Length: 151
Image (cartoon, rainbow, N blue to C red; front, side, top):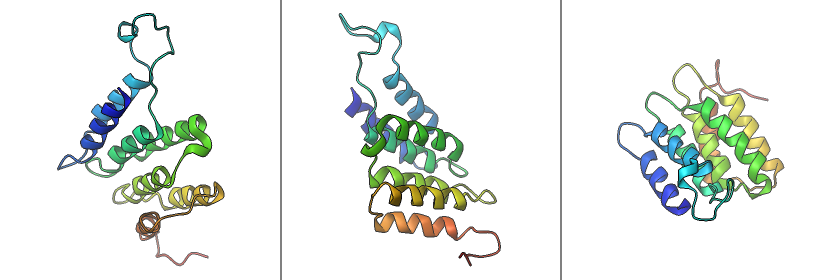
């Protein structure tokens, strides 16, 4: 069920040496669109438990912690799907995890502008950033080419 998948995806994010993001993504995709043979008795296509904001946030965590830098392109796609599907139900943890993805994008591929954009979207949505949100944003801004003298 969804809670089990969320717990497994969270565990996959914390594997030493880099997350198992591919396995996590496969689990979430299977939960989102299970094969026909997994439908329950009397269940029609589309009548299954969907991933929650918490499930997708755990997946973002996997993308942030992948070996060699985050999988920020995949994470951005997932986050865009989250915004389309859940809209106002996104919480500070979802936005903060996306900030973490951009912060950890790897040497030479700073995504600080994208991090600023996500931060602005979070504030525009009326979500109060946490200390962790600010820390991730500052970490991303530390990678601004030429320094962090932003206006």
